[in-house]
Image 1 (spheres, rainbow, N blue to C red):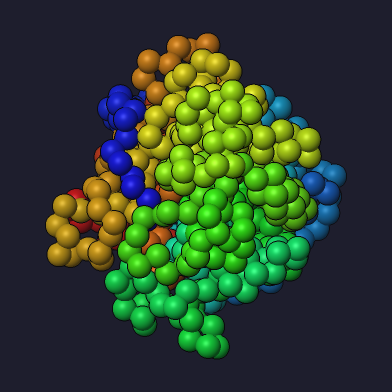
Image 2: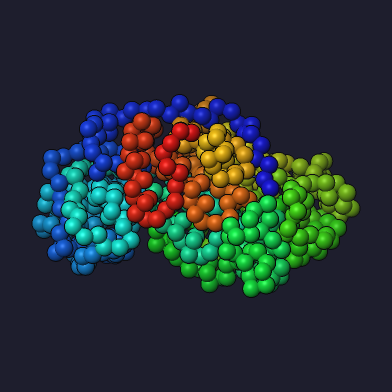
Length: 551
Ligand code: ACM
């Protein structure tokens, strides 16, 4: 179980109510068809509406082909119309058509930015890159009635979108969501559903928590026991009803894992949605599942098990053995081959160091390396792993505690309990995920009788929405080191997808707006109005969510 101590990092809570003159005027009096989430940078409502007809063509250039295919498929499902995708180098559409193109795109909006123009005659999305076209398409879908998201054909609907001119680009480049698949296992199809929901909200970083004390979820060919032993536990644990999950093996044990083929498919699925996956392989703590399979990499040989029996993590890899590093480097080599993204997350949080204090090998390592404390030994561990990752062209990212014993040279800090300000001042990139605003395992209401059991805490929608990712007190010259914001869903008490969705929504919609929209466009009252329509979209998609009601 993670401690989730209250963040030591004060002052993150933004005041949250900001008005954008451009946007608020443009949207004043706008009906539900203008319920865009996240709010674009600039949107100007125009007179009239566009009506999607069965004979409409979706025109694309070569870069837009994939997004065009997505759009055609989405529209086919809900409207029942079979749309023709036609490749064109034209920069202007004919009447009734939808054009997605890189022609005449605005370079200053960056690769994720786009313009979207809806007129009575046509729809045009322009972007310099595929990601921008994809996000333009997501915005366009939200302009149609919510049943555009229906999973089956809807009869008798007028498929109209209000005319508008939109210019949009994200505020932050890291718009993340973390799912803990170690405490509870989510199938490949379930992970893909999460990726779909992320893409709809223009989120682009999926932090995949794949290993922890209670489960190892990624097949590693060189160490088959990691999944043969470490992916399973005797019961569901955490005091949960056995039927709250279906993740049981044929022998009745709880668990599961992703084969390397599964992972390749999920990575491709994410890539098609412009989502980078950041795999997390926890070390040097939170590793009881790995040590249950290979206890020789602990200080005293265990035994360890994945059942934990309510205990907080005891396991830590022995930092005194070179074999530990050989093992981890071999594991990471396979991980690197599977995940093409720049970042590899190595955890680093909440390491129990008692064994290091008693272990002659760890003590010898400290002496040899001139390390005074076990915290320094943690620093040595992370720096050694970083060297390896850097040698493979990858960047190490870890939780706040990677600051202990001195930050590794190029490391990125994921701030959950502080550390962003000194790290950014030293030139390190940081991702903001403070418990105060980003921990989606917390309760959504103070009334626990109407909520599913949660780990504790209190994180209502309004507090997610009020989050300001740039830490108060960080000087402007260092602010570009704040890559963005991320929500984390730890799943000790979240044993199935429906429950996970309930914890995610609508809070993830709020986080998406925090990470995407300009600060000046944020307005909670407006968000709540738009959310009423957004709920209907989630309904169409069959996504479970906490309905708007008192916090
Ligand atoms: C964490 O919640 N222990 C990162």
